[in-house]
Length: 309
Image (cartoon, rainbow, N blue to C red):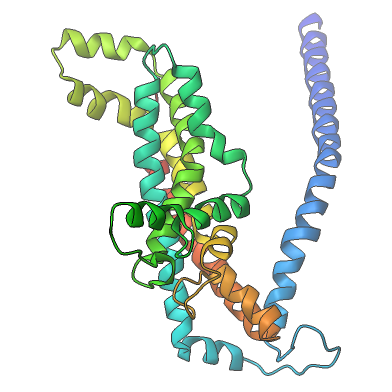
């Protein structure tokens, strides 16, 4: 009898705790509501509306427009400018990602040692991050500009001919990659530095006992345990590079012609300069798909490479 009462009491207490926990969990959902509403209003709804506009011939200003089906998509895939800006966008995204991660990791490995000027060096490398990308683009514009640019002033000083790199379609996309890398390599450095400092020294001591070289320790210990930081950096850099806008506007404004346009600047010009909002929305849908596919593929691939510390 006593045992039956005891079991009943335990069951009642367990049920009561479960109900309280369920009520607590359900009440937490209300705290998510403001964030969900903001995401819906400023991200999901505009994106869905952009998809709707991509099926129209809207000029961006008139209240009258027609739904024209997939005509804008047919136009997009037949447009040679589409493939040019896609190529540039991939160059900006993938090129910047590779450089930022290689250089950022190098900086982090250097600053992970107890250098006397470590704090100052870290601050200097990170400093460009806090500057507006548009301002950073104009700073470098006055370095590369043909007339009065610092680079050509140096060339003239040494008796060489000035060069117009910002108007050279074979060169200016790489200058944009360089400037974007220079500005945001500090973020990669900080993330890698945090990852390096979270690796236990026990692993390195065990590797030293086994007689591992510096390269072997980096390959077998540092790199695998740094994979979460690599995943974060790769995804952030890819997304940032693929939607590059400000630096391009400041340096070349997409020129000459469309030679250095990214998909972001191309959309901007279609909407505001050409008043072709329907086509701009179509380009936006393609850009969103490219960013989604590449970033998710990178996330899944590098997540699988992560190991338990």
